[in-house]
Image (cartoon, rainbow, N blue to C red; front, side, top):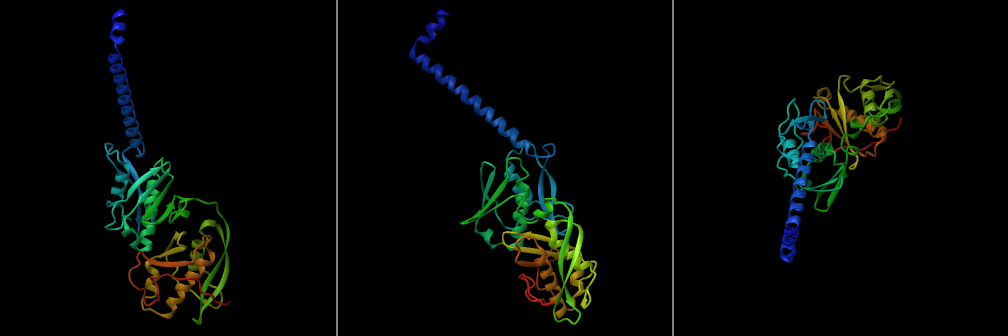
Length: 317
């Protein structure tokens, strides 16, 4: 005991002991933090820390679809890993939504919000491609337990997204079924306009009234004085971009085949879809864009502004 008292009696020795103790505490704390971060990074991979859930586009179904992509348990940088996987080629006839040539964003996180900053090329993306990419990226990143929302920034432009606001959020949030009243617009048999009709659809999703009405418009029955221009076998999907007040109606190839020769009927058929969708949407939607088999390339058989989008047109009757 006396020797120990002599050892620490010197002020210099006491300083050395204190500095050494502090250094040991810092080292131990750093090691513990690194281990905690490494463990937390591994925990976000699922299932079994061997895969990451990444969202891609299914052109045949016309909607986003999740795919479990394999990851290395040694890869602790989960965000760059997610960016890389979204740019990879998925399987099962899925396609990447990452725009060609777009650089990975600069990122930062504050609490449960992830901030992504893109270069100016992001503003030049076609609306449909940008909305699809933004939705897929949001769904992929908010699957991690510490991310609730994603902020997209380019220069002075920014918007905040979450699983409840992205492109096809209604499909991701189940709603109770109900009996829904819809208004339908059919083409007059004399070809001079549209006829308004009404119907009740049983056991429908109230959040998807626009899709429910469009499916009923295709299936019929057709009211007196109207003709059915839409092929009964036409399959349809709807993608919504609520912030831009736009909706994309994705029709199968049967619709295009019906009007392969091009006619005034094609324009009326398109407008009947537009009026039906806009009259029944519970979302604040003002413009309707069209895709045929998930593509928007070129004009559709002479239909004016098919690639530009449509607004509601008033018809009596």
